[in-house]
Amino acid sequence: MRKRGGTAAKGGAAVQRGTGAKHGAGQSSEAAQAPRRERRPATYARRITRTYVILLTIVVTVIGIVSVGVVAEYLIRSKQDDSAQLMGDLQDSFKNNKPDWDAWFSSSYRTHHAFVRVNVSGQGANETYYAKNTKRFLKDTLMTYPLISHVQYQEDQGIYYYREAVVKKDGVTVDYEIWMSLNRMVALVKLLLAIIVFITLVGLLAGAWATSILARRLNRPLAALTQAAKGITAKENATHQEALPVATGPAEVQALSIEFNRLLATLNAQVLRDNQFVSDASHELRTPLTAIRGHASLIRRHGDAHPEIVPESLAVIEEESRKMQRLIESLLSLSRMDHVQVERVPLDLTQLVADVCDRYATDQPPVVALPGGLWILADADSVTHILLCLLNNAAKYAPDAPVTIDAVSGGGRVVLRVADQGPGIPDAAKAQVFDRFYRVDSSRSKKIAGTGLGLAIAARLASLSQATIAVVDNQPHGSVFEVSFEAAAMPH
Image (cartoon, rainbow, N blue to C red; front, side, top):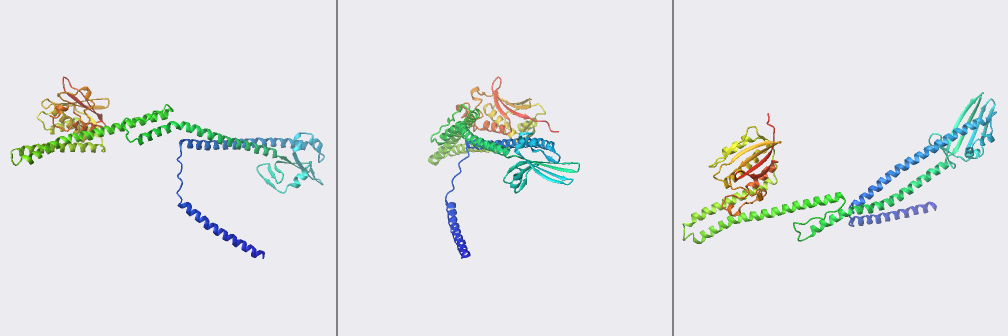
């Protein structure tokens, strides 16, 4: 009956486990179908708090282990000294092959916390002597576990320090054994551990709370910066003058907000330049398109009645379409330069300028006055294109005056100079002549052929070769365009 009852119970238990398994499977499938909770982002305050808790735990653990180890070592050494002293007193009180317990107990107060057994053998003597309570101590001990040197664990008794000394004299062997209790030491170590654990828990809780508050306080400037950035992003009619508030402290957040504002200013300036570029390009394309449409309309309306206007209108249409083609090609060149990288190699600037001037077709050839041995680090095609842009610009504004090309070197740089004798450029416009579609005198520049992109292309090519370009006044009149290249050593 018991076996059957036991089997039924087991079967019932099996049924219950199976049902529980199915139910658990259903719960797991429902949990799998349920949407996972999104993990909260690790904030600056949370990271600081977690780091504090980890560091404090490690430090307190190390301090606790070291403290307990030092205290335990000190107490064991103290017990070792006490046992040595008691062993000496015990041997001194042993007379006529018999210990004098009264003399030994009166030798030190430590004797009342020790258990002693003395075995005497030899010359017909075979006796065992026990100090007070020692027999009961040894009788109650069921098993002894040796821990470290001279330290034993007595079951139902605790931890004791054990010392033994064997003395042989006149054919008699005396075996002295002393057990000294370490239970008070263990209690002291436990109390020390409890204090350390309590202090650790209090320090973790209070420190984590204080650290969290401090971290949130330190994080306020960053949070304010983030909210300001979100506010700018959420604005529907954001202007190009938007800026983040500059924090008063700490210094890192203040520097970050300043750099963010600089970045915003750079991006806003780039957006404004792009908008201006689109506006200028549309304006430049509108002029030839208007001329082409006007003459096409003129031919359609009056071409049959006045055939003499057709050749003239077709010539205008062809000329304006060429202007559009040149403008579009220049725009494409500028667009490609925004994503191109050139390889700088040592170049003989004197020879390169001579080759360009030899191929440059003009009624007034440039005057070249370059010394030999001028080597620069640049891209040959870029330097050629820069020089052609500057020569074409000089030819447009001073077609009848000679153009002078020279160069100076010093300080690890080589400066190529292209000087003309044109009308010159006002000081207020010198920083803008390299902008796209910029003309110094718009009314006068309409009479001069060009797209207004030549100097912009030259400036972009110069930056690709890590060179700089600038314009200064020529004396007595005119302008000098200076392109500064990095000097290079002459290859062997």
